[in-house]
Amino acid sequence: MTEAKLAIVVLIDAKVDKADEVKALLNSALPLAMEEYGTISWYAVQINTTQFAIFDTFNSEESLTAHLNGKIATALLGKADELLSSAPQIMTADILAAKV
Image (cartoon, rainbow, N blue to C red; front, top):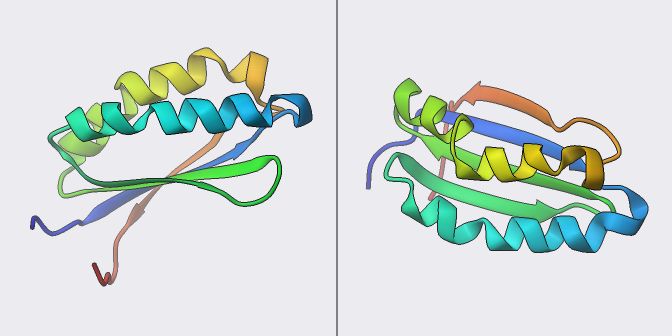
């Protein structure tokens, strides 16, 4: 397995009446993540009724940038005004330690 060096953390706040649609959108994104050669791991999680997060890992800046410009980001950002109560918080991070 390729060692992950970089990560993206995205915090997502759904509108109360749109949480199920955000959940469905995130579930539907898994096949898109599977297609991305440079994405080592990809997780979509639900924190509470309206809060979600995405966590993904990469071994290069090129792979991270490709993901940020890819189909998942396009799908999420394309529906942000309709589904989200605020813009997604997108943060990049260096991975210090990991157990996989």
